[in-house]
Structure formats: structure tokens, C-alpha cells
Image 1 (cartoon, rainbow, N blue to C red):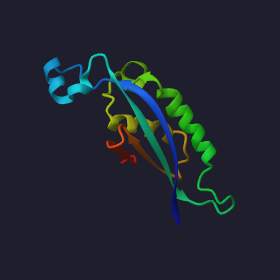
Image 2: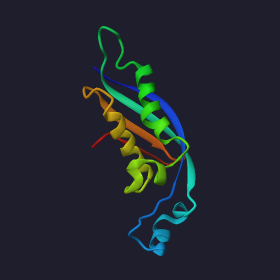
Image 3: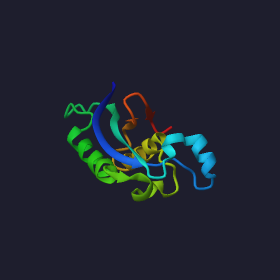
Length: 136
């Protein structure tokens, strides 16, 4: 029997959506107000889902305290109150869209979480705009 255990978290971060290889005009047309050269911020809401089999010895899928610690070290400590474009290594050459942020989070957590589990990242940029990434 497969089950999904989830942990919610949040972080605040600033970013600017733009491509260095595009003109200022094209960036403005494509990214609009998200292209603000002085950046803008979001209160991101994160749900990390771990999917797999329940351990018959413990009754756990995964110890949620361990998942909480991974989220803190790999996401919250790494991205909270940061300018993603300037302070987060992955975004030096990657546009920090909500889609790309979710993939970066998935990659960072995937390194920590046992491969026997599937991993799902749900990232809300606003209460109505969110993405879900499962590594596929």
C-alpha cells in the first residue's frame, strides 16, 4: 500500500524574471511587472510530499521530524529572505520562475531523501498560482 506523507513550510524571497540575452523591451513584454529591475517578492508556500510504503516496524512512511529538518536546511535556510537572482547559486544562470524554483527544491531534497521514496513538490507563489513537480 502506497501512501503520501506531507510537510508544509514557507519562505519569503525576492526575484526578478528576465533573460540577460534578451532586450529590455522583450523582457518587459514577456515578464511584465515581474521584470522589475529592483526585484519583487513573494511569500512562498511549500508542500513536500514523500510517497512510498509504510514501514511495518515503525508504522511510519518517513519520520516527519527528519523531513522537517531537510526542508529547513535545504530550502528555508537556503532561500528564505534571499534575493534568488543574486544569492542562490542555481539562479545565477537560471530564471527564478516558480517552475524553476520548484525544480531546484526538488533536486536539493532528492539528494537527502531515500531513493525508495517518490518525491512531490507543490510550490505556491501566490494563493492562486502554484506548480507541482514530481521529478518527471
